[in-house]
Image (tube, rainbow, N blue to C red):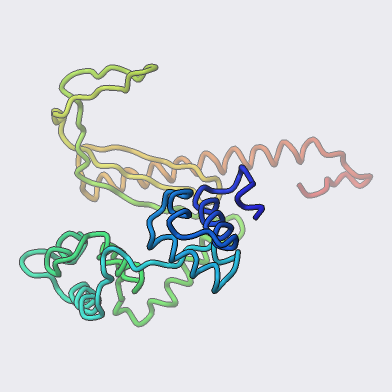
Length: 261
């Protein structure tokens, strides 16, 4: 056979082919065992395989049963049922596969395989909120329409606030990042009080106007709205001045009128 003569053939294919060649030449089992270094049962097995499937049967290994028996249907159903029910104690959900594995007496990897096969993801939660407002859909369309298709010459702002922001600082100065060494930072920190952040996002330009204030009352919020109004009032003035300057630079017609800017 070419398999035995080919130096690139796997060794298991070579000695299997040698068993087939020696058997075809009428050599006894004892001589085949001595030539190939295999046991009698191994020689008999591959002689039988050669007679049943020919040369192709020597190149294919039959599938063997797993060393560990597969999990039964009852165990799989128990894992799925536990995952879909409330866990015992103060735990909110079966986020850790170790708890399910301990309850069912199987391995953690087996729990992960069962979850993956049944499409279960107990560590993920999708939040939702329902509104009781009967005009909720109309309000959503109006608000989303301002962002997607704002009116002409309109300024669309998204305003939000964040109160009780802690101004923290590390107790010691850390070392910066450098080659071969990561940056350092102390595990403890000191508090420098709290602050309140007010921010307005200009949807058209993508700019943000932000102010930090010590208190969180309606007076601070009104002051922030005044800052935003003054900012856009100055912007409108500069835009009008730019339009007037552009209009003055345009040539006049024979009747003395100027084209609209």
